[in-house]
Picture 1 (cartoon, rainbow, N blue to C red):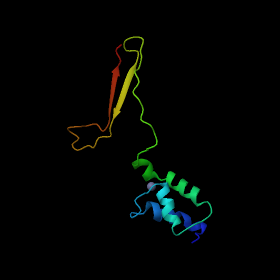
Picture 2 (cartoon, rainbow, N blue to C red):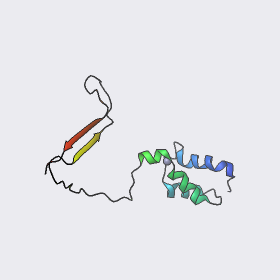
Picture 3 (tube, helix red, strand yellow):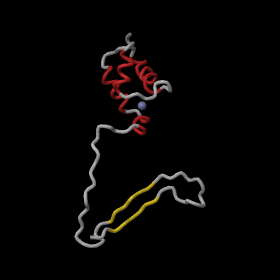
Picture 4 (cartoon, protein in one colour):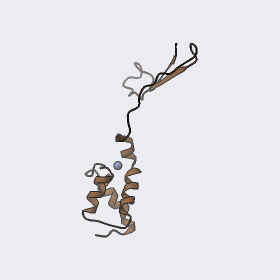
Length: 111
Ligand SMILES: [Zn+2]
């Protein structure tokens, strides 16, 4: 079944964003839609739609990236390198026990 241009976004919403769709990836979204619908440029339309989904971007892991390796940081003298970690956000259960939502930890590197 063909899909008019003005209905394509709504179609993608139903097959990707609706509560019963549960944000499937590009391949599954396209495969499900192609069972009943078609329009010219459907593959790139679905790919762009899924790639621009903010819910998917914030909740799904990127599985095609290789894990990084920890590399030593070389320094020439004591305290010439400053290392910082940012921790958080923490859920503020009781502001009297943990008054900060984020912590920044700085550490000078020894040789
Ligand atoms: Zn999504």
